[in-house]
Length: 484
Image (cartoon, rainbow, N blue to C red; front, side, top):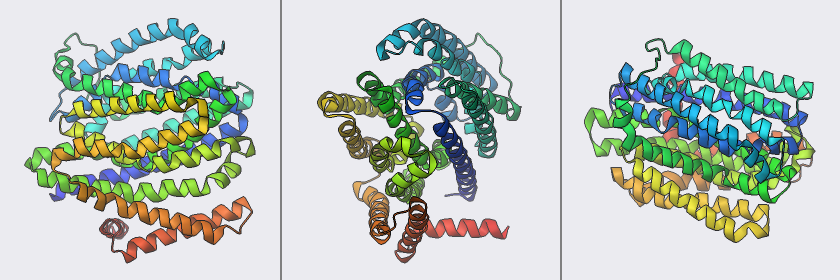
């Protein structure tokens, strides 16, 4: 790997880690405050709408952000075409969803959803104004700037949400929090992206050129969104808003945790893989780059997510209170499958960087079909059985992803096992040993204070004794940074 690309990757990972870490810490603090001010029912009201805002967001971007990143040298007219398309799509989608709001409220048997959804759906209209800017920043690896923007947006929106919750605004606090977040995020993007300024254009030729690639991404995004939120929709229809709120809380904490890793690597993975391919067109080099990023991903995700399962009970009691204990079993189940979610991000970026968005699309379609079968078979057995079956599917679906995406760069099953299994087994052993060492401790604060450092020390020791190359590289990089 050339020194230039190596430096870009290391710098991108550093700022990606800082960005993701700062984001999750802020989300943690804000989430704790809001969960202590609001009830599970109030969280459930906004939680059932997440799938609609997410799908609308997918439709407005339509995969053209990834299209821009995949282009070798996108010009101003390319960004302007994507900007215009996004604005047009957002206007159409908001109009459709505005008039669909009463139907959504009727489906979930919650009349208040009519007004709440009409406000919440404004988020993707506002977001459409900054999607092309986000593509520009990703393409140019402006990870430092994205970290700053994300932190400012979270602080500002969190302040809005907490202030409204204290004022007694109930679920409206969560809706306005999302509006504020997108608004501040866009303002930051406009501030940093000064080399290009958007303008409405009637030349949509670049969009047409990117369409075959981007439309596959669009279908994939929608299917992926449905896959991620399908349980929330069915829970909203079948169970009480209190139960939906508990699941939403478990899903939120699980997502926050595995996103810490996913976002760290995902911010640069596609751009790095594309640049590596552009420089040499060497499959062997692409394979080395990919395997190193995947090992780094597993090195972080396995202990983090298994550790969350270990301390989930104490974590919920100490942060958001005993009122939310109903979400603990679901959080622990989701955390196990959540350890594998960052691996999905790596395979997705691999297929997209190779121009094979069709693999991305069909594998996600297959996943949602399997989830539909799980729902059809398991819904009558209750929420916990459905969550467990869903989590098992997430782990097993790595198999088809590797079969279809891995072969693009000659990634063998033997290599996959060597890259994933050691970290998985090490993290699992560490958590089991830590559990038995600390099981006599009854106080939640003392228990979590003991389990976290013990597990971290054991995992580091195992990695050190086993001579894990990824640990050595991380240590060399950090030592080099400290010496500078």
